[in-house]
Image (cartoon, rainbow, N blue to C red; front, top):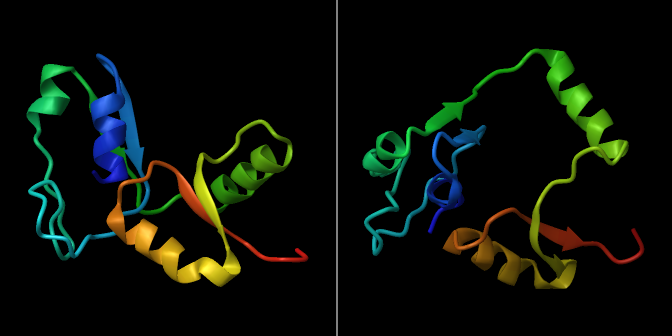
Length: 112
């Protein structure tokens, strides 16, 4: 299940979900995944729970620098789904393409 769909279906009544990026899936075996630059979403999930879905394509320059500052200060932390050693990059890419994770997939570089 794509992470945006997990976010939307997990949100409570009057909840909000935010998407700043879209990575299309080539997997056509699931109706909720569409190939190309589109996405399938049952809008009833949004309106029956009075939810909002927000998207963003551009932000002022200070938004990114502020975000980095919040992360460095420990005020917010990205959600890590899992991590792989760099030598297992193929497995990490496979996990990413399966779209069954919520959060980031990290690569651990030895000695870094």
